[in-house]
Figure 1 (cartoon, rainbow, N blue to C red):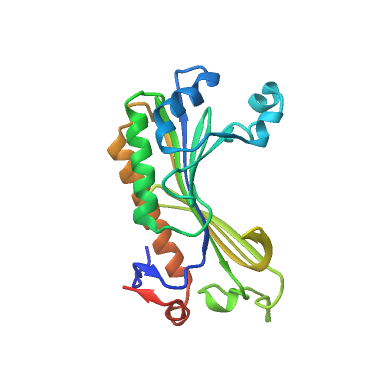
Figure 2 (cartoon, helix red, strand yellow):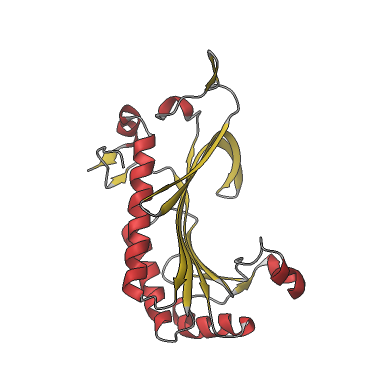
Length: 246
């Protein structure tokens, strides 16, 4: 991977959402998975909220591949309003959707939760680990990144442009989405800006003998990979305007 000086953190943090997803298989009946998980975590989370997918008939949820790994319930952390866990019969989604708490705090939240779950052996096989970060900038980002967009001699930097690519590196799938005009909700209000959306994924063919520490280490590896990828996208002079701490 490219080499550049990577900040520990940014004073002007553009992150609006960070997510760690674990897709899994369980020997438990699907209807029992959430109950088993919540029984272990109830002291650390508020009362669960049902997600809209539960309004769909079970037959549709199970037959549609796009819904296979969707969460059915959302749990808000008692310790922090900024952290939540979404749970489905085949997946866990750890999310920091408000003010970014920093990787150390986010990782501690994930590790503590996983350590509670490992004792009950609800998760018998891990299929995928993914780390995704979405960054919002209130201006056209294309002039600030190490990517050029043009058709012939015509630059697309000031036009409405969306860029997507996927590639493998170090057994990790990198999914990069960049758009310079997108409307997202921030603090409940629509905001127009540029998005850099990075997703780093590792798939497993047959990880039935998974262990807690290896899982935690792989999440950390994917996060570090995502962070390096992000800062290699940005021009150094732009990074300097974001109050980096080294």
